Image 1 (cartoon, helix red, strand yellow):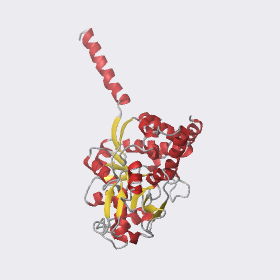
Image 2 (cartoon, helix red, strand yellow):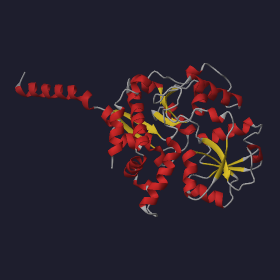
Image 3 (cartoon, one colour):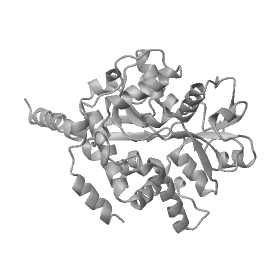
Image 4 (cartoon, helix red, strand yellow):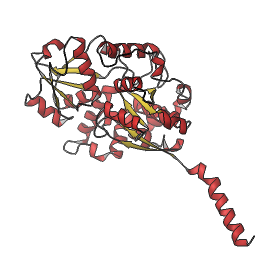
Length: 353
């Protein structure tokens, strides 16, 4: 063997040995709003910008998407590995044999309501018959839940009301001001954006919707099997980002603006922009907290939550079976997800500028 050949073999050996240490697992991750909103900082910009995913060996591509139902379908197809979405599409898909699973319970309280402006003549859900309801899109999780709420009071949501996609923020505000819609069906921080624009709302929910599971990480199981540990690292990044955001909401806002400059308003003073952004973020923050939960671990599900959620969507006709709820989710990753230095995250957040 010549010296050149020996050197070439040695160089190739170095490359082969070095590859596992440097290679990162690529993940395509869908949000469920059309542009990354500051309220999503805890599970998007914060873990990305602070390196929580990269340091764990993940190359996460965060992509906006329009609605929970559509995002879940993309994960089913394998064109994305994860989304943070509401559970109704997961329930339907699992009953149809889709290989997806809820792996991390992110938002621990319901987020969807139907709302009207404060001086509306609509006083209860039953008053919405014949009315027009504005939604982000027809594939939004808020739309699915609103339709379920209407079924719960005996209405056919496809016949008894009209649905109008009105987008978010200024588009939705214009639809309300011009009386294009009589009500809107959205979620906590979408209402907070409109509150910043001066709107005040009255909200409607039902006993069933008040117990629903909310946003969760939904995973493609084939990807999980092919990439052991990746789902745990991905969800742990979200847990770290959530703890950071709970500790210092203003820092989370600034991090989000750094990652997504277009999300920072430029037509108002910065102190006002920061105050309004924190208001949007605060609409979600209390739902991240662990205190008082039946299982006070980041990401943990309980069977009772799944039983209530499955029962609601069965009763309103979204699904037609009630299998054992263990089919929909796993808590197997939760202990490992929670194995990180929480004190270090809090200290970093407290001094972050």
